[in-house]
Image (cartoon, rainbow, N blue to C red; front, side, top):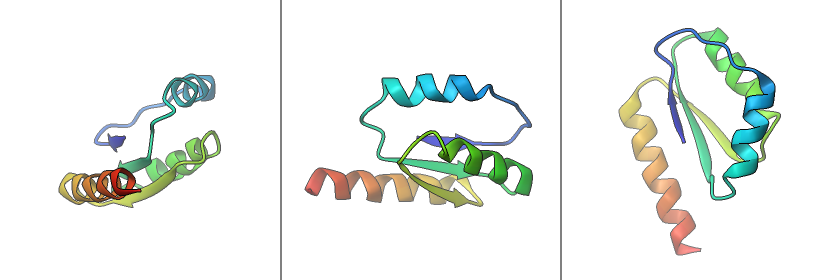
Length: 76
């Protein structure tokens, strides 16, 4: 999952519980942001899941990371 956070937003924590319960195939979570507040929000969201979370400055790096993570999971 890649979250490209170009705008401010807020989300109810209960919505994250629904998201993680319904997707058992989630291998990683990439957050594309330059905002410290947005990164802090992502760390709070991490409390609802055991998936790997990474921060990126641009979308292309996040896509490359997701491809590598997906390839590694397919190989195992």
